[in-house]
Length: 291
Image (cartoon, rainbow, N blue to C red; front, side, top):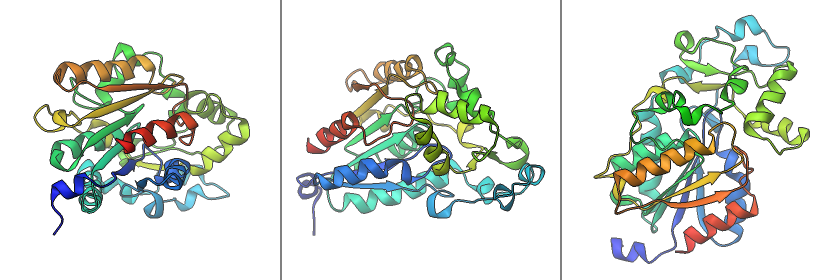
């Protein structure tokens, strides 16, 4: 039988959680490079994403925009609890082989915090990469209304939305839109220093549907559970979706909640979507995994 003490002497497993309308593909370059350096890592597809993604018939070519606004989605039934259950299962399996470092990007921070509340004893570190790390306010939606989010270009991305989330139960974005404003909005908000070719590749990685209830889900890290896990926040200083001012607010709130467990803060000059195999990001995770 392997004891916890034995497991703690083994190399850690990095578990990566993607953001909204995305999948484990966002971390493929990062996990590939880290694996080649000898690190254990896995990127998780949250329910309804990756191999489980839903692509409406009306989303295909030729598109039927009228039908796209109303075609039902199975993701409407998925909740934050489903996300947490998926990740807890992965963490439990990884923990059999050693320590676990749980990493969330963007909206993936909600799942990281909830998992931290649920199983703090199984996590050796939580990492937020330009991610929502809710502490004082209950959810993502509340932070969208803060002054620190005032410079966000989120509206340029949601311009691609083609359905009412309150009716359909999902946030459905038409990444295949022929509207130049959608292309430029994605580039401005998510991928500021990408080439146009890089933005086109990004658009083909993004998924149309995301469960609409996640931004309103309770997402606060709790001091007596999540708050006792060592944490790192990777600030992306060129981020125009989650502005650096909002990232800094997350860090300050977390440190105020757990003054004896301050955040390890790193900064990388990158936009919201990285890409995450940038050498600076690879080095950060390689260092964290080497501790």
